[in-house]
Structure formats: C-alpha cells, structure tokens
Image (cartoon, rainbow, N blue to C red; front, side):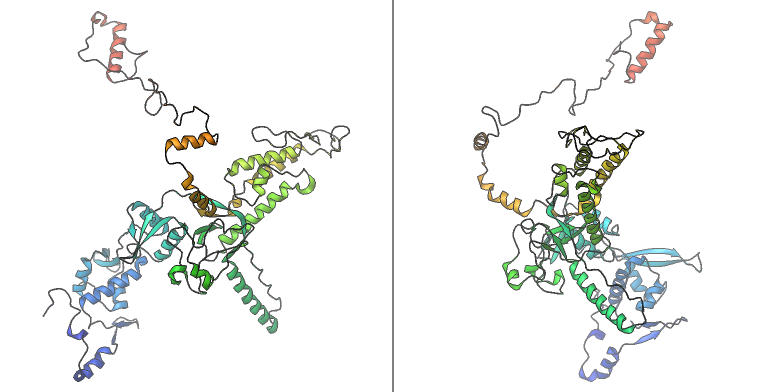
Length: 559
C-alpha cells in the first residue's frame, strides 16, 4: 500500500528483522553490486532496495558535491549512484521528482550521437545562483541590507565557507550569532575606518640550507635532508609571529583583526597547540566582530596562550603566505633601507636631512599625513641639501646658506667651489641634482612603504580607553559646553555657539548654481505688427517666434 504522505522510506525493508528472519537480515546487510552492461569495468551499486525519496536524496547530495561541473547527464549519475534517470528508465519516478525539485536545474541538451534528440541533464541549484566566487559572494552579502544566513550561502560553490571565514576575519562583512537556530547572520559592513599601528613589522625567517653538490654522498645528503626539515619547521612556526619595534599591546587586543603584509588575520588567542581556531574553547575563540571592547577571559592567561604577545612580537592566528605577506614585508624593509640611505646622504653627494617630512617618513610611529605630500616635501629637503633653494609651500632647508655652487651643463672646468672663505666641496652637476631629487621622490613614494605598519579596524585601544574614561566629563547641555569652551579659551567671549545662517542669493538654485534663464510664451498672445508680413523683418520675427515657442533662447531676452 502506497504511503499517502510520501514517506516511502518507512517500508518494511528498512525495519530491523526478527530472529526468525536471520537469513533475510544477512541478505539485506550484505552490499550487492551489479556490473554495467557497457564495456567499462566500473562497478555500479545496487539501489533496488532504496525508496524513491532516498534515491532523490542521493542524487541531490551527488549534484551538490559536483556543482562546479554544471549539469550532468543521466549516464554519469547512473555510473556513480546506480540510479537510472534516462528517458523511460527504471527510476523515471525519481526523474519526475527531480524535475519538480526547486534545488535541481533541469536542462535539455542535444544528444552528441543524434543531435535531433535531446537528453535531460541535471545540476544543483543553489539558493543564490549568481554567487560563483569570492567577489560575487561579497556583492551578494552587500545587497542583503537586512542580513543573510550563513547556511543559505554554504551551497553556492566549492570552498565557499573558507571565503566566508576570510571575509569575517578581515572585517569586510559583519557576523552576528543566532543561538536559537545555531546559525550566523551576515550583514554588509559599509565604509571601512582603518588605522595604522605604531612600529614597523618584519618577519625573521632562517635561510634554507644549501644542497650539497655531491648528491652521491649518502651521509651528507641525509644530513642535508634532516637540516632542511628542521629549518622548514622553524620557518613555518615563524610565519605565525611578526616582529615589531614598538609595543602593540597598548593598541590592539587578542582576537581583534589586524592586517599584516596586505593579509588579514586575528591576533592569536589559541590556548591549545595544533587545534584550529574553530575548535578552540569558546572563551579562546575570536569574536565575529573585528573590534573588542574588552579583553578575552582571564582563564586563558591561566591556561597560557600558545603564542606570546609581548613588546616585540605580534602573534597571528594564521601563517603569512610566501607569495603575498612575506614578499610584501621584505619589499617594505628594502624600501625603508633605501629611504634611510638617501636621507643619510649616501655616497657623500649631499648633506643628510632630518626633521619635518624626513622624520615622519623615517620614524616607526604611524602618521595620518598624506604620503604624496610627504614625498614632495622630502624631495625638497634633498634639493635643499645640495644648496638649491626649494620653492613652494613646505620647502625645507631654505634658511641655510648653500655650501656649494651648482655647475650648469656646458660650463667648463673641473667644477667651481663655494664662495671664498667657505669649505664647500666641488659643485655637483645640475643633472645629478635633478636625478637625486627624483630618486628621493620615488623612494618616498614607494607603495611598499604602506606595508611597513600593521593596520586595524577602528581607533586603537589606548585612544578608545581614553575616550571612554573622559566621556563623563563632556558637558551634556549647550550652556555647560559653552562655559567649558570659554574656560579652555577655545572660543572668544561673546562668540555664539552656532554659525550665522548663510544668506541665499536670489539668482542661485538649491545647489548654489546660477539659475537658467527660461523663456515662456504668454497665453492668448497675438502679434500686432502684422503689417511687416512679407518683409525681411517680418521673416526674422517669424523665425524668432518659432524658436521662442520651442523654448529656445532668442536674442537678448525675447520680444
């Protein structure tokens, strides 16, 4: 008797047999296979004992695991599952169920052997079919202003959960846990507010041993392999820790998001060695938010963190990649060394520069100043060190008297020296000065300098704590705020709190742009100079009237 509720899998063949049916039980638990009638030797599983619902479930799981392959023909499904979905096949009922299933894509494709016929292909249909990679995944979450469930996105494509975790780790999306459904709701973040941390970050990796030239020496090759294995293990552990010359503990907490070498991580909070962050105890897991208002549980410090967080190290919850993170940190170190060499007067071609933009660029302290502006001021400082007066705002070294005269191109002689009585060196060539200034500007504008500092979301820990501690001291009323501003001499006595209202000009629109002059034709307007019809002036007036009726400009304002 058919089950009217569609629960065909609750049949007698799925119930445990009694003691008298031992033989039947032996047959049911023994896996049975049947061979394909084709020439291949592939073993096809026997699914004759399964119900149609179970077969449909198997097909759905199979299509989901192979969703990157698109729609699959019935022959591929039959060889893998033993379910015949071909036209007129044994499992035609399952094919009809799949055709009506919203999770299945059904396409008709011409038969390669007989193009006049078509074969139905089956593919998995995710809830968000437009999500194919990380970029489209982020775009889909940004479109869902009211949030989207994590579980609704897990079937989009292969490794989608890794991309979701990376987006959460880097703070590109927001995540809120839903304990009732044991799920997580994802929201778009919007605009980012990123801040550089003080201190230049570097990574120290030991060099790999050199392979011996004589590969036939078994003893040396064995020693080389052991040393190579040991160094690789040290290098792998070193990629989880970056070095810094300024203590980061006052600026960031464990579990918060940090960008190092253009890669996003969380400051390591692991307390168990060799266990992923998701499998750590809940008190040691990083929160979904990229910013924390308080430190993690004190019990973690009692148990001990796996990686130390001190004044010289910043631990990460993942390893820096060789191609991105480590390469960017090494390039940033070379860019800083080049900048220091130019500022110190390499080769003795010019005086060393210090102070102003040079101090800001060469310092380990993060700055909010524009990098292009700093590069321009630094180049002017280099020019001033040659004795060339720098022009424009921010010129440095203009007050010092030059100690050398610039030798213009084409001037003879070994080069003039400074004024009599001075100790100036031989005058540098004008082209060399120009080249040195250009090199200085390029060195200060090196994009790899942006990887010198770690980056976090939001203001630093010390700034936030200072704000929260002084929040109660801020007056709540305008009268008290006005008194506080007067006491601290931030405003003058008698000065109003609000700015005067701006006067609106009559000839400007709401955007502050001049109003367009428009021409309109009055109703019941009749020409009175009909005596000019048929003359040249009448023809000109007729053309002007036509243009005016079309809303076009006529002469100096109309008739």
